[in-house]
Image (cartoon, rainbow, N blue to C red; front, side):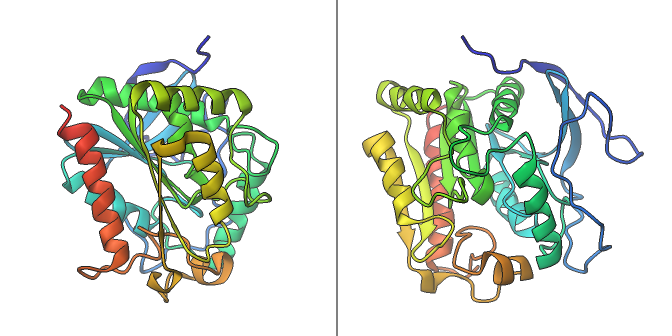
Length: 306
């Protein structure tokens, strides 16, 4: 039986008051003490801000573009300028982008101190299963509800999902819902304490294996060689689960941007974020080719197929 929450067929315009609180709001890993604005913060003023209610759980979602829907999830420590740059590339390729706020301060330049606090909060949040043995993160159920709502709003053959880092595997568990027909699992970092583990419950793993075999779902995934958060062991575990449906691609660690934001330089401290913080925006660069491959994959699954 599918016990996922049912999306409410409405979106609520954001209130001028601070973010919502009370029983209807999600248990969200917040940003901690606000250090104030940074010159490199992104105002996110080219997206529509919505409060999306799915089965009584309300989250802010940033929406932009036109065409089939793609859910672009944040990476630690939140919806950073680099995550928004990726979302804009997806939007400009012909898609409606949905960027849900799951943790951190939206639009903030990733600092080391602020990022550490976001990680601490997320690791103890009931929404996430950051460590081995916890099964699938409960927030994935809310995200599947968002995907169903986005499919209803945008039409097309289905919805794409892009997960990054902490949310990397969510792009796969979202595919438990048939509305999701394209999954991009970028540098998945969970569980944090098991480099060869997958952030999946046993029942979800069986269902995903069956869906890949039955429906032709393929999963595109990227990591850097030498990434201490997303290892070759983890990619091997995905391959063991999904077989040829898992298309895991590895870039040399030397291709990573050598001067990312402080959070990635000091806390992540290894090549990690292929199409966001460690992308080098130069024509022909391996990270730009990876971005273009992701856009081509989404186009093939969501635009050409329609």
